[in-house]
Amino acid sequence: MIKNYTSTVPVERTITRIEMELIEGGAIGIQKEYNDGALKAISFSVLAPEKRLISIRLPADVEAVYEIFKSQSKKPRPGTLDNLHAQAERTAWKLIQDWVEIQMSLIKMRQVEFLQVFLPYMWNGKETFYATLKQGGFKMLTQGSK
Image (tube, rainbow, N blue to C red; front, side, top):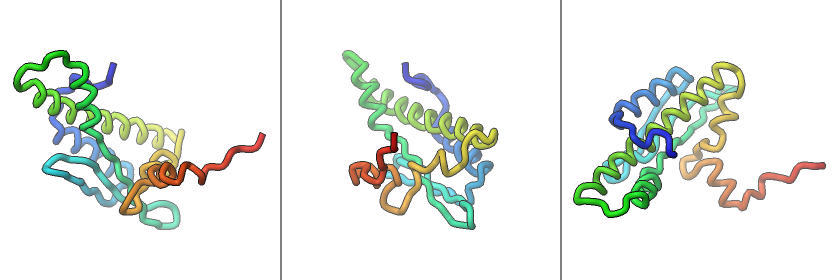
């Protein structure tokens, strides 16, 4: 079962909660990225050790969630696909909210460090750190010694 698949919380409220959590966690700037009027990602900046400004981008792949919902609908009635898309948007962003809240709780409880959690999402203006690793075939990662 997908968590939050029945969420009725408006996306705007979910985004506000994500922003509040990020601000409380030390974000000094937040930016939203839209494509055709739909929110695609939230980016934010934090001061890392040694006063280095770091950008982090948290995307939500609404279309991937929509495709899963659509595949689970046998014979959709008129309007059902539009409703499924709206539900996919609510679900995708609610999952991001839950993830951010959990990560911030782990940081507050000193279980992890901020950059340790958000490292894959560090943004260089073109792509995330994870995308850079993936594009390079993960060659930057070395095999550990035995």
